[in-house]
Length: 263
Image (cartoon, rainbow, N blue to C red):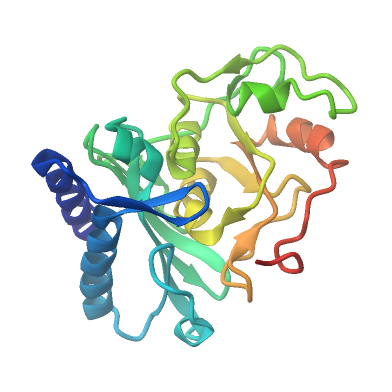
């Protein structure tokens, strides 16, 4: 997984270096580039050859439930943060995860622009470039370092205004990098009150858990991956002391269940 992620990252960088990247919208406000597809092809070939009996789920492969019937499934985001990638912003990554009967059991997140490789496996700890990482010890919302939209945090729909928090600047476009930064203790929490797909979360969820944190929906429900619709309500991720305080505030919010409200 490490080797495949690094190779994929170098391929994505090569597309940027050659310039004139071909970009289009695969759906409204969801850009994709030729690099996304090339990286997806490389990873499908590399990972499929290494574990041909695993299933396959990727943002850039048309979903076929037949590909997700094995107990173990590769969950891949070839380039998480495509908008950042297209703009030349460094906050994008390549992400691979292994999901075993719904649980993420291994994950690698590689940020090529920083040469940062985050990795974790169930029971094996979390690492950045080979060194152990751990979530921060923050236990209070006020003053915590938050990766989230300032507009969302200040939205008038909240029943109680949020205490003052330090919003990350710049805010990584890639959800998986946000999770990685919390796992490394660089930020205290990340919050997304909208639907996230399995490829946006699986590698980051195992990384955060192995770093001593918690990643759930805004309702506090643990992620169950590879369901009929491979998507989750939302994301709340933080250390174990801070997480329940965030859930107390987010739990009353009603959001569509992606298992029911599907496109």
